[in-house]
Image (cartoon, rainbow over all chains, first blue to last red; front, side, top):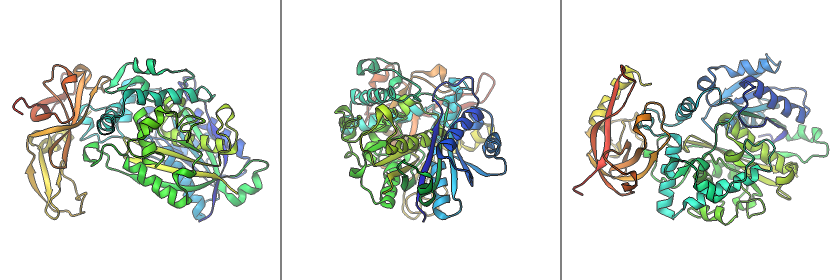
Amino acid sequence: MRDVAVVGVGMTDFGELWGKSLRTIWAEAALAALADAEVQKIDLITIGCMSPGLFVGQEHLASLLADELGMAGTAASRVESACASGGLALRTGFAEIASGLSDTVLVTGVEKMNDVDGADATYALGTAADQEWEGFHGITFPGLYAMLARAHMQRFGTTVEQLAAVAVKNHANGLLNPHAQYHLKLTIESALASTMVADPLRLMDCSPVTDGAAALVLTTVEKAEKLAGHRPIVKISGSGLATDTISLANREDLTELKAVRLAADRAYAMAGKKPEDLDVVEVHDCFTIAEIMATEALGLFEPGKGAQAAEDGLTAIGGKIPVNTSGGLKSKGHPVGATGVAQVAEIATQLRGEAGDRQVAGAKTGLAQNMGGSGGSSIVHILEVAS
Amino acid sequence: MISPGRSWREFPQRYRLEAEKCTVCGKIHYPPRVTCSKCGARTFESLVLPREGKVVTFTVVRVPPAGFTEQTPLPVAIVEVMDGVRLMVQIGDVADPDEIEIGMPVRLEFRRISSDGEAGLIFYGHKAVPRLDA
């Protein structure tokens, strides 16, 4: 396999982008990444997008978006794995270059979620769960994660204050990210006073509905060395993809995100890294409990210790292992198809030393974990500064 | 919304709790599957699930999806009816959702689950209700 590097990073502001359509925000992110990379030729465009059909009534994004960029003719493909669609777009691009099929790939993720109302958005997101055997009974996405939270609380004694600590930390990080949807300081008290969505999860345990796009340019490390200039070369050293049962009722253990553990094991093995080697991590905190369970499944903390670690500040910037320096899905926002790409954009920015006020000093190795549905799929990438 | 074809197709599981048991390893699947998730075999024999079980985990949905707006707060649980056999169901007949707890004994009863507007299909299935005898 050929070594693959990230040579371009771009993203839009995340938020309620009423004045912009899906194609506009996508092109904005793509052009930002292309300008950052200063490459001349793109062999392939990959697009992670969960459900343009339900959110904006549009399919066939490969043609639509290549054309929008004035690149009709270029190979393009859309990939989907619910909220892990962005991570899958990256893995697809990575595999194309590693295998020699493509030399330079524009990896993108996008979701335009605010063109439908709340009920329709809830329905669209709900299609990531088992519609026949879960959705039939009225369960929602927050409801599924609430069931995981309840099981985690029962087994490990996890508290609602510990869940809130995750939201407080991620909003504190989001204050330092100019692209974040929310720039607000959150306290434990106000988080615990927010509206109940699905017991025990409150509004401040949930990521928002967001419009946004993110993009990366990938090429071989060999080509990256010619483009780099004074910047460090950020190499993708590991990629892991795994699935689990889509239905929560069929999971033997409701206190572990097995797909995350399997994807992480595969990525660690490919990269030759261990959890202790990581300097900065982005995880898929679609709900606060998801961050706690992801940090456990990634091996950053032992099973059952993730909540205490969050409460003790071990995952804050300056802590033992900073998690979600970008603000995470909670504060930065969660345009579902864009999230997996935006997470890696944050890690690449950190490894380049360009993260400004939220920079983790001396970060050399990072990991991004993207998740589909209630853990039905997960994708983990490990990045490092090439020596 | 759920089409008439899909609704009809799901009657055996919704109305009668029909499951299948793998003839090779004995694992029980609800709903039935094409391949056994434990051993990969493809031959099964039918059985009907027992109606009694206990709550494995639960939530109370306060922000409902379309079709359930008149049913909030909506308690939903994963209920285990046999060792390793679990299903997602609503919990009915509880005046206060705070009465629900993990491990609570429940019985599955045939109930109306939702409907497709005033002139559309009515969807029936099973809900879990507290077992007063347990």
